[in-house]
Length: 407
Ligand code: FES
Ligand SMILES: [Fe+2]
Image 1: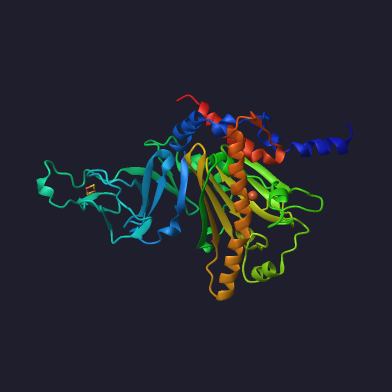
Image 2: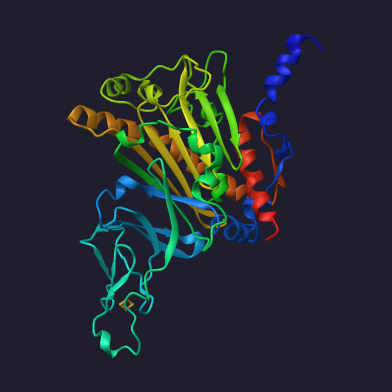
């Protein structure tokens, strides 16, 4: 075999070689259609892993709180910034007779959280501080029947919880080498959050898969994003890097070299960052972006198992979260994080940046639902992935290892 042929062979399977243990077998369809398999994922993954629930800047002040329903684990959580400035999570359950403590999605308090049912009141550290008509109870309860805590920690301003009463590892241990993948990225300078959220009738892994590879963009998104990631010597998409960090993984993508923004897009880009022209601001502070220093770099993406993806561009970042509701329904939560707009032109630019994503993501959602239906038909038994889909293969492999692990 001459050197040129050897080189081509090596490039075809270069990402697999970074994690050969995951193998090359096609994946059984049952992993996305079997309710029993999903029940194991519920118990062995979602009730044990560290799960992202939001950013610290959603609760900037002492007493601020928000609610995160975690349907897959059958619970609702309240995440509160205490008077001591510590961010904590509790089951959103009043200890009197079990009412949901917070009924709204978010709010602020002056240091106390009161139940709507009979007024039991807790401080922001979760301590039961006041009970109306306390003397009529048969035992002292204040300070005893406190809110039920859930493990909670933060990383780079992202809040994570763990529903295991005794997590097997800390958040930093869980993240492992992925913890410094975006070291120095200016997450705090993008406080504006624009959100798309919807329930997709497809398994959580199928919905996540479409956000963990870019090769479909040249086909599925050819109308809204013609040539955004493809063109020239890369007809489908050019992966600059794929790396694995234990359960987690990352990929780096090049922009299409022949991409031409439309007139209105070019106008919007002249007033603020977006995905198609992200600038290089963040590269100055996060040296780990664009590991191969490719001049056509467009973004780095970190896939944190099981259900969270962060996309870091030069001037904006996005997060995608996939919350299973059952084995074939997923809440997909996409948040675009942008710098604060200070004038009308920047607001226009941000609205354009949001709309620029709308149609491709609708296309993804539609195809996800069609895939689920097709797989439910029973007509096919396995699906196949190539080397640029290595992150997806990796997620299925990690999930399956967790499902099959002995307790
Ligand atoms: S259930 Fe909350 S005060 Fe009664
Ligand atoms: Fe897509």
